[in-house]
Amino acid sequence: MRKPTAIQGRFDYYLTPSGKALGPVLTEIGKWGMRFASDGMTEKQNTVYGLMRDFTVALDLDELPG
Image (cartoon, rainbow, N blue to C red; front, side, top):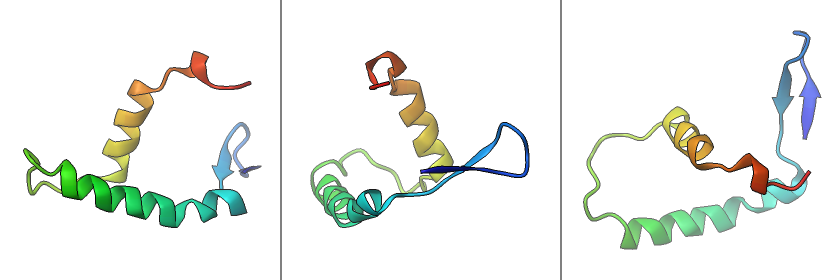
């Protein structure tokens, strides 16, 4: 869900109840990933910024619904 901010053309985004309900699912996927995909990982801390940057680079907007 998005709500306009005081700055014209800008929005704040919030999870809907259905989005919040995905929290436990994503946590379990993360645990699964750490068990099977940790080979080759470093101790470097990942950031939300880096994760979102990588996600948006890989995202094909033409594949999203309208």
